[in-house]
View 1 (cartoon, rainbow, N blue to C red):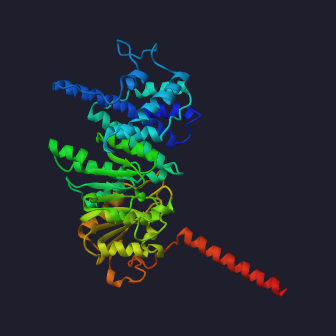
View 2 (view 1 turned 90 degrees about the vertical axis):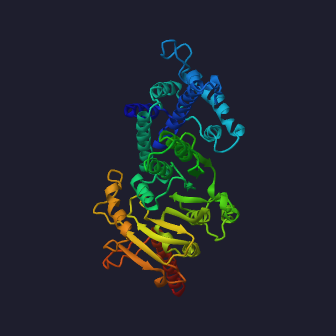
View 3 (view 1 turned 45 degrees about the vertical axis):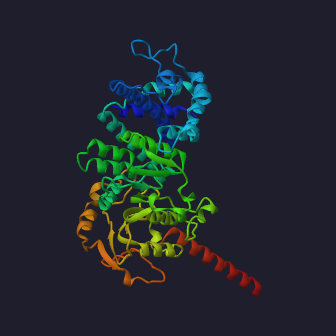
Amino acid sequence: MFEQSFKNIDNELHKDAGCSTEMDYIEQTSWLLFLKYLEDLENNRAMEAELNGKKYTPIIDENYTWSSWAYPKTADGKLDYHKAMTGDDLVNFVRDKLWPYLAHFKELAEAADTLEYKIGVVFSELRNKINDGYILRTVINIMQEMRFQTSEEKHELSELYEGKIQNMGNSGRNGGEYYTPRPLIRAIINVVQPKLGDKIYDGACGSAGFLVEAFNYLKESKTLTVNEMETLQKETLYGKEFKPLPYIIAIMNMILHGVEAPNIIRKDTLSENIMAVQTKDQFDVILANPPFGAATSKSDIQNFPIKTSETAYMFIQHFIKYLKAGGNAGVVIKNTFLSNGDATEVRRELLDTCNLYAVLDLPAKVFSAGVKTVVLFFKKGEPTKKIWYYQLNLDRNLGKTNPLNENDLADFLECFKGQKETENSWFVDLKDVNPDTLDLSVKNPNKSDEVVYREPAEIIAEIEKLDAESADLLKQIKELL
């Protein structure tokens, strides 16, 4: 029903000078969809209040509702061309009036878990990139046909929106950091097995893939009562996201999947001092794929007892601290975490305070950047004694047109249930691991002829060392001459 509408919107945005990438397309589609959703939500709330004999006070003032500025209608329900703005008038209204009005909600909101707060954050951080008011008018007219009334409509919109997120992830540049393949997320959730009533957290939620899939998993786990559904909606899923674009994508993604007011905070997770975390701040389940790379702020490093400039290692410390005793986690991380000397003390903290009960080794190209990753599964409260490893070996190369799928992970899930030892899975007793280095590298004992590829950073470091030695040798030769 809506697939052609999304294609038509992308075609229009492609014509505009302000939009040039998949990331631009989904960003601009998202803020418009968000406002269209708010209109439908407010109408539904008003009807419910009327049926219950109550009065509903709208969040958005009448002059700034979708049906006022975006799509005013005539008496017969068609677009009122006398009232509908277009061209420069429309762009100027969005820039000078609509945006400042909506951004002001951030200051008015009572708490971060309110819809008002999310409106304020979205329109404080993003901007309209559609420069041509005639293109914006066409996009609005197309979007008018998108409705959030029935579960079928929401389901179709959510599927199409997920497709747009995946396209953004496959587009390269920074898009890939916001997208974790959904079959992998579902496999991780099937291992961790969250329960209704658990508080589930992702401190680097990107497009909210883990939270969306956890919501679906719990919603489908049983027939929910009204109270259970309210708990799932309001007191189960929590996330933080630092960057503005993935923040609105996460909000919109969760809304389309049925979470009315997602508990996602726009915040730099690493700016929190984890030494101040209390029991009340902790979560039962943590599901995440944190970013890696150098820390953006030296002050962030001071928030962690184990000092490191690698963000992924900071996030592991953050997750350990935020996990309740007895809590369960599934975290994707670059595979060098298992052996890198800079991460030794973080590994020690993980192994001493948590049971690292499984490691899933993933092939390259699971992610568009081609970085080799592993999934760490750990429970907090008792030290690690034995680790079950599974190496995912596929008979094909992964890529944009040949992504990871559910069947690829079926054997892993089956073997995990019985903790089986197979050609691709084995146990490592921690007593056999060097206590000084705590090297947990994936070394399949069943494949002696396996080729181990070095990390690019290691190769570059060796090249630089050889260059330095060559330069020194040339210098010595010149001195002799």
